Length: 483
Image 1 (cartoon, rainbow, N blue to C red):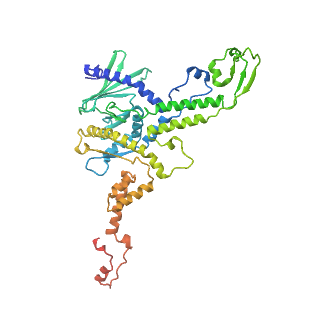
Image 2 (cartoon, one colour):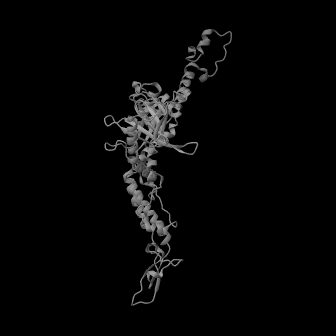
Image 3 (cartoon, helix red, strand yellow):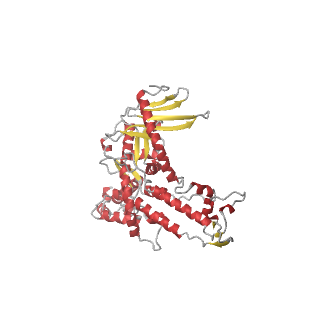
């Protein structure tokens, strides 16, 4: 195959199959993203009432979906990778991560996966010859990428990425990249040829599809993941409805409303003489009853202003439900008692949320290890045995204070060296470079103490000519003769 050619039969079958499956899932993915962004439509509201309110009262969005996702993601911090049998983090893999700006990429991938079930990472060769030791790793959205898993191995059998761009003449160009185990090929949709034509090809012959799904909460019935928002969306819809109703009540009923007896519905018209709809009447402009035969007169009065406490209580009840299904403590949802909880009480309330974060870490680490193995495969052409049992290193998902963590580490270090010094420093959250600086300063301190006594005792005064050599040596501090 060459540039300008059309896809082969096998490639055309894969493209068609994956595009159809991707299209079927896109509406659900977009819906989940709308809830995370707080752009969902208001539920449980009559359309005629929405038309009546018009711009007077806008929808109130209580964005619990974003809070649930962000609070969980904030507990998940990837620190690096450790090859099997080695205590230190691998510096070369850390350099690849830094080169590809994965400090931000980790967070983007985890948020995307929690919202839309999965994110993707694509590994490829670096087109810059000077940087060929740093393969490219890009984080991709499930709105553009889709994969099919091998049912036997659960590995990626094929993948596509779809996107569009504007040509210099302003015409929209549509691209699709097909990822297969032996090669990667990109096509553009040509209106002149009536189909896809090839624009680039990478025959890497590595035997691996260079796309890895980063899956949130995979299940046997959903190997490509489930969203963290599934349980929260109905409760968020209810909260947005209650909050919007509360604002409507504040608009129409927070001040005393008047009522009138002895009027017909036809008596109520707007400024143009048009009849006021029933929904406008219900919304609170005025309440009335029709004339009766016994009473031809009219009577006017007013109701007491509305009490909004019932809305507050309903919102709190919904917040308790969100706390139950998400593991998020109630004080993180904005509800706390007059007496603040103790530190132990806060940690106990967060225990389930911490455990949930640790479970998500177990799911994400499998994907990141596969990504880094692909990095080594693209870079070196093979994966060493030490990388086959690679370990990802994560920050503690809990929220202990630095003093509490330091106290625990010091006790473990002093208790017959239950943990080595380097592990103690990693537990305290120091980076690999900071630990290396500390170890270099440790070696310099030891060198000065053992081989440079002048640093400890000061410069030895010069001996006079009449002092015997034995007396001079006796005056020297212990260890000086080792210089």
